Image (cartoon, rainbow, N blue to C red):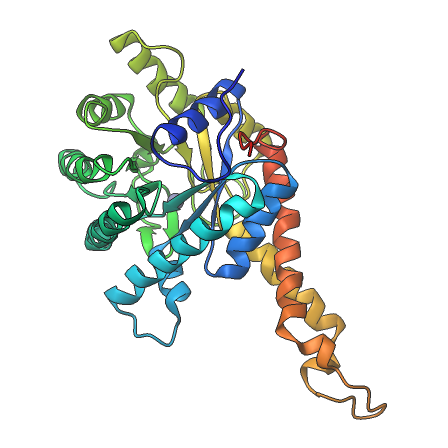
Amino acid sequence: MTEKLAPGVVYGDDYLTLIQACKDGGYALPAVNVIGTNSANAVMEAAAKNKSDVILQVSNGGAQFFAGKGLEDTFDAKVLGAITFAQHVHLMAEHYGICVVLHTDHADKKLIPWVEELLAQGQAFYEMTGKPLYTSHMVDLSAEPIDYNLSESARLLEIANAMEMSIEIELGVTGGEEDGVGSDEIDNDKLYTQPTDCLQAFELLAPIGHFSLAASFGNVHGVYKPGNVQLRPEILKNSQELLEKTHGLDKNPYDLVFHGGSGSDKAKIEEALGYGVFKMNIDTDTQFAFAKGVGDYVEANAVAFKHQIDPDSSTPYKKQYDPRAWLRKGEEAMIKRLDEAFKDLKSAGKSLAES
Ligand SMILES: [Zn+2]
């Protein structure tokens, strides 16, 4: 029987237990990008409703938004926003009765100082509370030469590991763009990670600490016309098999992350789950769900968004324009979209949390 975990933010050995349970059980956790307490709470509510554990993450832009758009687009706002987001989740997660993984999203070369500062701030948090601020940070140097990607990842993993944290790295390139990171113009062969590159990463990083791997198998961020890129999950299988053979390891030794999953064919998702994918990032689809929930409400209550009191009937519209009314519609629609994600990823009913 799988070990149970206390509800709340998980890290270190508990994070490894959670990942192993996903891989053994053939399911993955949605990693949902959030930008404020509305979306963060909606994700935790959805996870509790579906009895699934979940991953909450912020991009650098999401972190800045969390701090407040009124602050200039500074480095500080991105750091402060990521800290306040993490603190909110540390306080609230256990009250939702599920396990939550705290993650940051893509940090390319120019955003490495952001990760470094979060590690420094995380060190202070760790000394104060005995817990890391984040479960894991993503270091995405996939656009750089592989030797640089891996040596930088190793340097950061060493710092992270000392406070029971993991990192996620990327090999190959996810197409499209995620919050300013990425590009539409890349060679097609870069969209498919090479098994030998993965092996090189494992041999350098595994002795240092725990890492997860975003391997590309034709994934693209955002939702585009079908047929643009071909998803080929068997690429993941090839990487797993090379590592199994080379180091005599059990099935699916890599902890894999599926980026650019929005709009993916459900059969391809299912196939990827069989090859050791434990985390699937979702942003575009939940953004749209939130927007549509609000949009439908505004459309149905159009007068209340123009007049405090109805110009003909003098009906007061306070209940309709109260931001809690329409932001809640956004949350509810996001939760509904996540019901589908928990089902697609087969994580519903599988939370390891037990108080
Ligand atoms: Zn991504």
